[in-house]
Length: 118
Length: 386
Ligand SMILES: [Zn+2]
Image 1 (cartoon, rainbow over the protein chains, first blue to last red):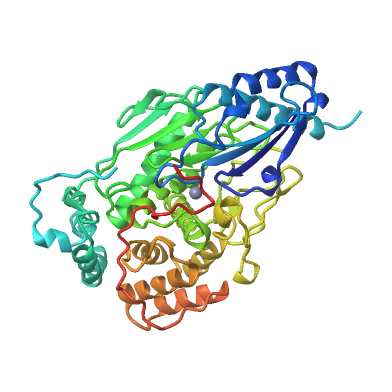
Image 2: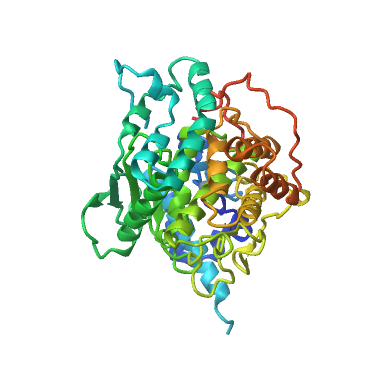
């Protein structure tokens, strides 16, 4: 499974944080990958509409997340690909949990990249 | 957020007199302040009256402004602790008049809301975001490691930051002022949150956010740092703030954040579909025009430049889809209305816009269209609709 997380909006346009980030679950620590996979299913991700949440009148600086989940050729869900845009605050608890897991994975990768190698 | 009092009889004089003028006179006794208030009153009447009489339906008739006749401030602050959750409202942690809680984010939000309220009250005689005493609600400790602050149309929301990139978002008073100013813009403008109008919306929040801080620190225009979000970037991040109104494009240059993309001049205007059409990118162009006008006008930026921009925001010629050039014209018209036609103030404003590549033309702006829309009928594509 491959997941792309793209962040847009927020109080500033920060080019480095605005770039889409792709997670190959196979490259993540197994426990983390498993938690994310479970979360995708718990959220019924493939049944979600393409936009979740509404922009309220006069709102500003809110973040919008675009999640794309792609499943490889094997299995019941093989070859599927779906994109959901989440507008915060994300009310659906399962989608919220999925988003949090992805943000955590992103943070972990960033911290790892920042560490002096060795 | 607009409070309606059906059956209120509005005295015709109150409809025309900007209430902040009355309050300013009532509040400040010095001759200079009285003179300034009277000058404002003299020039503002026509436009305020025009706006009121031409408002289609009752939508723009501000019954709320009657409440503004009071000469005392009516701060009503409520700070909620979200405790890392995202479901509003959280727990009420501090309300108006209560002492410090010891929770830094709660207390910073309380103080920042107070400074913002006081700024608009003392400088413009404006009673809260709607000029009708609207309570100010802030929600802190939103989410886990949450890297943002936003205005959701009713309330301010602040994350704690992840500590890697961002510190807590209440740390910068101009950020608090920025979020609150979005509420004021929505009430006065509104300006669509898209492309140039959205960049103006953002710029107005940066301008008044910065002025809140400058007034709190009692700084003149040349003493101020003109940064938005100083102190917000975590240790180790290569940068000093989110934006620089003075030198756009120089706020940060960091391996994780990338490089500050803000242009300093129209020739570098960024065309993009991202960020609602670059609202947080191109806002630097009107930001810098304001900074340059403030320097030219001298003294404290809120005294003249701030007043001119505030009047422009309230000007009936400001349409929801206003672009930079039109806004520049409105500011120059407001400068001449407030300080005299062909005066140094008008020249300073025109020159400032010229320096960022926006030529202010002398032609009149049509007043035929009245901005009665609160929300564009069709949501721009950059923002998902309901
Ligand atoms: Zn903003």
